[in-house]
Image (cartoon, rainbow, N blue to C red):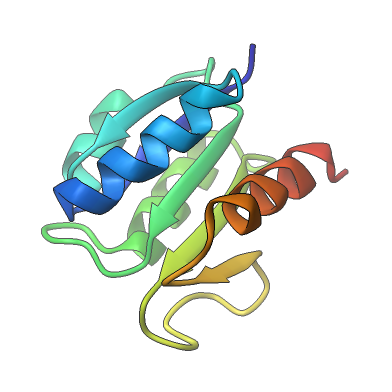
Length: 112
């Protein structure tokens, strides 16, 4: 079972994403903001799914910090603001459909 660290500050959105991911068999760890994501990360995480605009520690800062620990960490960024994240990372614009989310997650996890 693959583990996803989901970092989203909006409770309703975080809840819906977590339900969708758990519904297809992923293990999901939830973080409400960047600081919590840094605390919840460990070697069992297969994918970081992170909103780019977060309180305390931004999405790009979370990515940079966690990739210092694990350079090959797979990352999927999401945001309601176009081009708000690093352009070299997979990006899913909000709002997105459940199937678009699941397809993007699977695509990133299956990438080399």
